[in-house]
Length: 325
Image: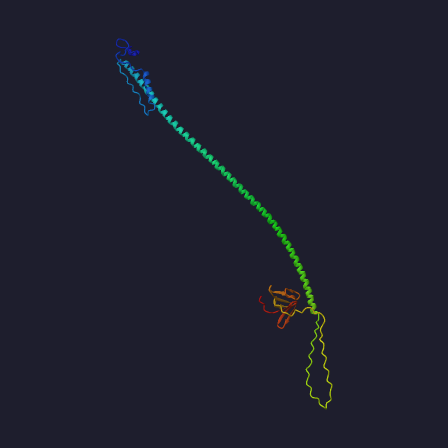
């Protein structure tokens, strides 16, 4: 078995190979790691991190020792590069974390400001709603008061109208009763007066009025011839006594008005016992016994020649043209 198989390198004399005393010892791995960490910490805020370059002092060694040192150097270089990469990633992560923290802080501030604005807006809206509610409530109360006032006024007006209607009905009833009484009284009085007047007229028409005829005037004296001597004197007759006028001493009442013509009426037509009389109030059909205002009671219908005459207690109504009023 050779020396390589036992894993212990030896020189040609069978002794272990040692480094040359004239050459410098290589750097300790702890020192190299501390330098790398200090370099990483000094460059943590740099945007780019370059891995540390290790300058190893070459030394002369046996081939096996050189192989072992080269492996250690490569291992240390890998460790340093890994640590540098970890430091760079950590620095980037810290930077991103700080930036994210700043962004989150900004977002949080914006959210707080937005929440404050929303809260202020909500308070303003609540105030507006409260004011609007108070105004609407006041308007509603005002409208309700007006409606109540109008209802009370309508009720009062209805009551006043009811009272007024009752009073008007009562006055109308009283007035109608008075008018009925007055009409009955007027009719009764007029009927009584007309009956009395007709009775007096009938009495006057039936009562004979004795009118003495005026005596005839005495005849004028005739001239007598001279008396003849041979003739005998005859006695002259005495003048006739003047007859006395016969005047009735009976009271005849008022002068008969049946012969005066009435101007307010005119006779239009006669049919049997009925006459059609015109006047201011229009034509009227009358017969004996009827009453005409202003003309009296109708007595009879007479025919004078070719004309008809309506005789009333107040005068005559002839067939004349209607007068102009």
